[in-house]
Length: 89
View 1: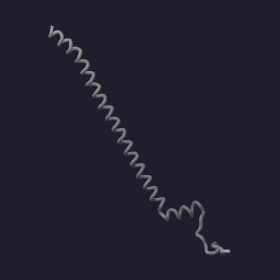
View 2: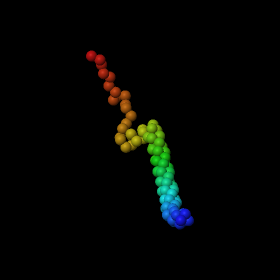
View 3: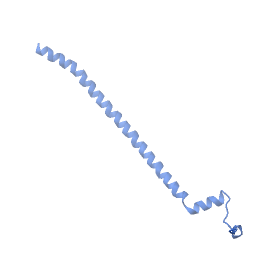
View 4: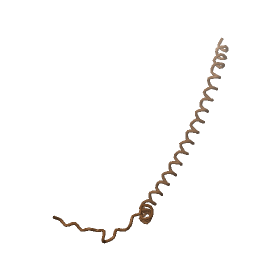
C-alpha cells in the first residue's frame, strides 16, 4: 500500500516539477530581454543627452550667435547715431 502511494505521488509531482522548471526558464528569458531593452533605451537616451549638450554649447557660442543674427535675421550692429538720449522731465 505504501509503495503504491509513493508511486502515485511520484507520478503526480513529476509533471508539476517539470512545469515549474520550464516556467522558471521562461521567466529568466523574459527578464533577460527586458534588461537588454532597458540597456538599449538607456544608451539611446545617453546619446541624445550628449547631442543636446553639444547643441547647447554650440548655441551658447557668441560667434555663432552673432553670425546667425547677422546672416539669417538681418541684424546689424547698433550705430552711435541710432542711440537717442532721453531727458528726464
